[in-house]
Image 1 (cartoon, rainbow, N blue to C red):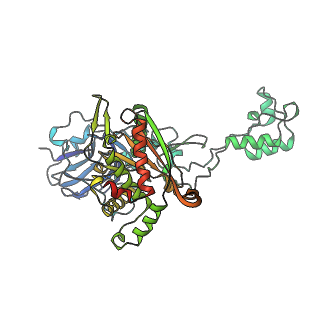
Image 2: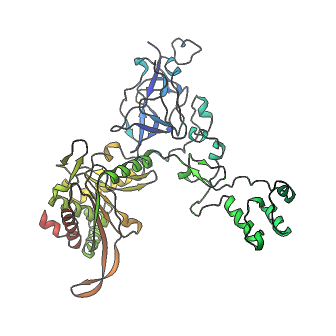
Image 3: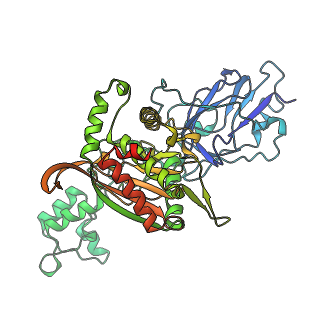
Length: 492
């Protein structure tokens, strides 16, 4: 039996096809035990720790940090018998000889070792878990990893796959070298006549502007000072107002264009999956949205009372909590919206459970983890679940289970000060509620204009499943609870 064992990237979720190597926790030569953490990977849904299925010594790390690899591709070779005889051929692991990590711009690591033995496949994952809350901020991609392959000695291979790899690590705001300015004589000798006064020519030379590329706006086509300055603005990369510094996290792994005016960053992980899911949803499910403006003054008073309640002292009480409860009550009254459309069989799948998803904006992108069986929870339990869900999402520790099997969703655009929007359905669901900002506004109350707390709601629905009338009833029921939370007691 060979002493070298390959560990191939397992499917840690439900049908995931690829993942990114975030950081290696081991280096070549380290001794590892079974279930000891080897690395962290970032999938479309979460950051997950991969434990070792073998005990032994790390022989080779096949994939550098920051690379994207396909499920089933080998990522590490472990010598399970480090004290045994060396492998033939100078100690190179036979199992890894045919493995090749192709990690270019948009490429994934692929297994080139078709002849690897079944014994060295390492396809069994011995448990995994999400990163503990005590884990600090993970190292930036591209940090030293100790990878024993030539690729590890260079910056992330995504940037190295293009001719402008050297520029990929430079700030996106850095200007490309300015072209040399030919003399007027040289320009005329080339058949191009430049009309510009000596002060303008000197300005162009000082700024590095080629006068042969400048269009003259003066009389007879003469080039003016303003023309030179305008050309400089076009050819020189300008810092964008949104760039707070040279190293923005969302520019990481990008490739800067030759002129320094653009940075291309491969769509990965959450952003890539979100794009795919939203396109599929928008062009598969016919969306329709209904809106409602609601007086939520009583809801805001309830929130203040709950904040002062000792039983809710251990949770964060916000208007969103009451909106969640109102939405659950409304869907319970109209359970036919708690369903999905099966495109393969043209069947409607009605769900006998209610998993409430909450759209969360995180540094990794938009994720929609859900609270399982939310309809069975009391208000305090719902608050606890919401707090846990939000904390995991912001820390990048949502698990594939957190993200799967949602039935209805809420997006809280009001937290950004937005009145409302037209949300796109989460794939596999038929309704999503947008909760807008709560504002103090003049409102007609009991025949008089008074300042009241007001918000706007929007409900998007899959029109194959939910007719406009049914959607309007669901939204109206949500509004009734928010206008008078005691209404929920009537329906309970």
